[in-house]
Image 1: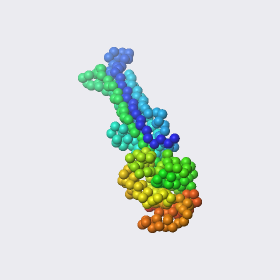
Image 2: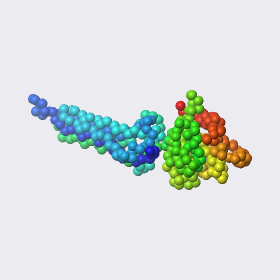
Image 3: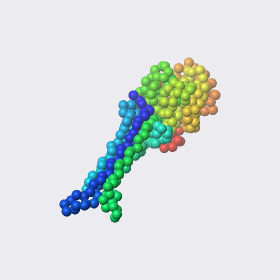
Image 4: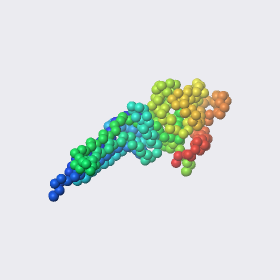
Length: 332
């Protein structure tokens, strides 16, 4: 099951209490203070684990508590500092403070880690308060409480190319044709209920990651259809590939709707590098309608068929070109 949103409560550990103690040795009737300090409480840390793909673990556990620091003891023995509690998250996870909405961490790279709740400082023992005028202080500090906060976890898929189109535009069929991914494919809207990733190989040295995003309809930015819960995944993609079903009444208007939905959700998306393709050209009885429609575009979309493979080599060449123009090369 693909889960891309979760809400958790994290509690860092409390610092250990300082100790009030005095030396008690033979022939030393009034020994000085020897109370040790308390150890620091454990931090709560979020860390990227490249093996994880969803946030499903947080459906079953929502509360995470780090250990408290150890209390100080006599004979100057300090309490043990508690270990950090590490929460493993998939790459692409955005961590927000649920109360303020502030982004606490944007986790992209494998191994990246951020402290999201700091443990409390251990209290000082009475040995820390000895002075020339107060050689037997009867004072020790309590450990400070650790930070507590509610966090929202939002997963945004990391992909080089994101497929954008209306329901049943052929996105899943294309991903299955070009990669080893096997999304559900059927001839009715909203077949894809969760995003899928596939690795598309261009040759032995180059490949890229393609994401199949569930279909968008007019009003998606307001949550219609599958709406906002999947629009977030487009934000991480470097290149957008718009797929327009040539069998629909007006593919040009479909493109306008898709562009508008992206703009209303996040205006920067419409400035992202993109390609446009007409899908399902294999079902056209003749190509006159395709020629007439393509003439309405300054740069005509690429005609492709994921079923027969028509146009796919050229599509891959164009994707490869745009990815290199964007920079960072293609994913390997």
